Length: 304
Image 1 (cartoon, rainbow, N blue to C red):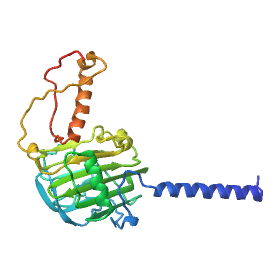
Image 2 (image 1 turned 90 degrees about the vertical axis):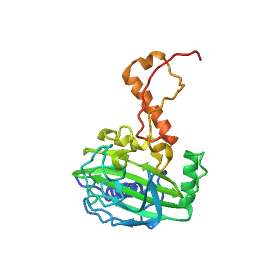
Image 3 (image 1 turned 60 degrees about the horizontal axis):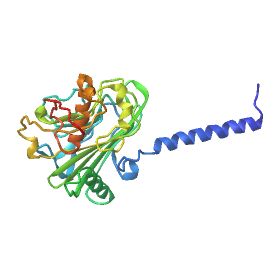
Image 4 (image 1 turned 135 degrees about the vertical axis):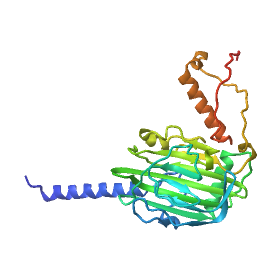
């Protein structure tokens, strides 16, 4: 049955509203993201699967666990390398014990020829440095830090290889101030990953490494926008410069007091592992290397 002119007009009006809504949503960046894209003046990667960035000469040296770098590569498959570009789409799980430092906000098989862009930008002055200074001093208040250089790399609405409709947005921010270095990993809407995936960082010989809990499970990836180690949903922050407490680490025993709802909660191994994981996240936030392993030597019940 044909539609009246009025009905046709209403359908056209509704379609236009729907299209406008989709465009607006796609162009809205997550609040926690640093500026990116054409508005920020980013350099944009070529939209070819497994295509890597050209060499990026850093305006300031970046210290990563004792090694100083003057260049980096923003690789299409969700990770940064320093010595050479990488088209590696098959995820090697940390610790790799390899010869390359890797920063992986979301290492997986990305196909930007399907959708999305990868872009990056360096800053040595302006509001981005002010934002970075404020963020680092909030997360590491004992340092009195001032940012002098920032690199922002963003994967905006990219899709996983061979899986359409999997738009995923994430970002890594490298921040330097003299001999102090930090990285932020920011997550927006993320789709379930059907390919191998991992988020975190690794170092030469894996002397320091960290994997965001749950990130090797593809079904967990949408939860990244709610997870954090600094109480900011969707953001993970790490100090990654060279520090004496990260070199020649030896086994140490520390005493920790904590309150649990029931002492019997700690008698089951799976509950102990959960407590240790949460405790390690808090300690990493305060500067403990992610490679340090925690274990209970003794559990003692005391009166409150």
